[in-house]
Image (tube, rainbow, N blue to C red; front, side, top):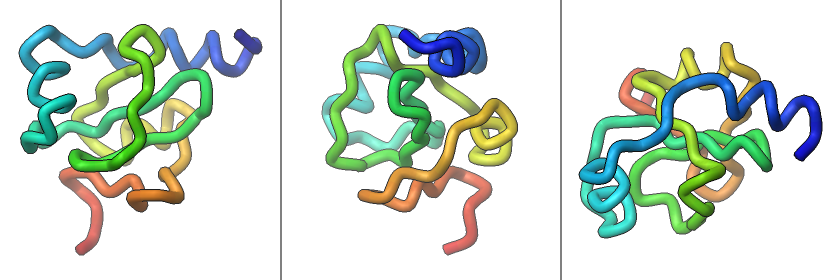
Length: 84
């Protein structure tokens, strides 16, 4: 893991079991999902499926971006505070 990836991995929080299960099932969680190894953040329903140990959770898109994550190119990375 690169230095930047390690710094991103230290931000946010790890997903709880119920949150992870809901996310994997495609259920809305209202959270922003970020991947430390790639530096992206995704919205609920994104087809990207990262490994749990690489995933960080944020309450808002702004928090994820402040931690150094960029929006996913597949889903747009929209979160609860993203414009429609």
